[in-house]
Amino acid sequence: MKRVTIIAVALLLLPQIAFGWGRLGHRTIAEIAERNLTPKAKANIEKYTGGTPLWKYSLFVDEYRNHPDYKKALEGFHASIADSDCTSPQIVRDRYRGGKDGVTAMNNFRDQLKNYKELPDSVVLYAIKCISHIIADFNCPSHVRYVDNANKGDFMAVFNGKKVGVHRFWDTWLIESLQKQRGQKINHELYADHLNTLSKKEIKKITKGWAQEWFEEAARSCRPVIYWIDNSKIETMNQEFLDKATPLVESQMQKAGYQMAAALNEIFGK
Image 1: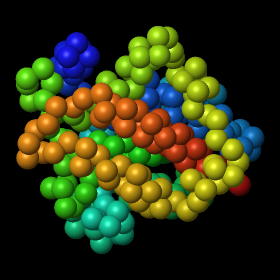
Image 2: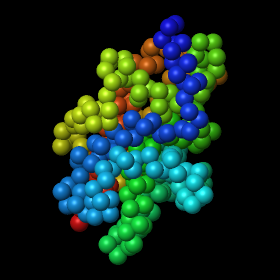
Image 3: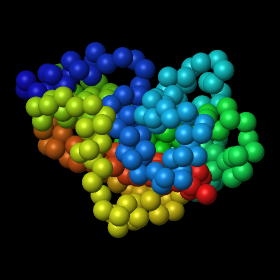
């Protein structure tokens, strides 16, 4: 019961601005991506970033989502939509999100950046900032939408006798609480050390394809989350839930980091 109480307090005290993976999560994913850039891609990217590390851009989409100059452009970048078979063709994305989703955004950025050397530096830098966030978000369990689940990214549970939304459980609390459970406080570099461990064969497997394939894999991996909490009964999220959530979250963070690197390598590694 003590653990449940702590979770409830942490959730209720979180800031109202939702970050897809929390600051630690987003920065860790971007750090993994940077470590897996090819030398040529890294050099080309640094022509636009001036050597600023990707993790410093990883929260751009969240931090500017309500800025009058960026709000319209960034709308929809935070989530993607899948049908009940966990596929995300354009017809589904257009029908349920009006084409405003992470997969469509990544397709558009790839097309836009085919001749990136001919574009203004500011346009290319903006795209780098967005890519450093979007792939992370569509690998986050609370940012995967399903058409047969009312296109929602939130589920209700009971903590200490109170109903709470668990969106922020995935977004922020779980990632930052893992270090507490392990008895150590870590930053994004140390967390990247912990997660950047896949073999070349494993990396090749999870980076095959492009955004749609990556998101569809995320949709398949995250689909069971819908059934971990029975919405009709509003069940208590317990240790069993936490034990299942932790490996899923860390696996999704790994995938996001390597896929982000693969996207940047494809665009800037030529």
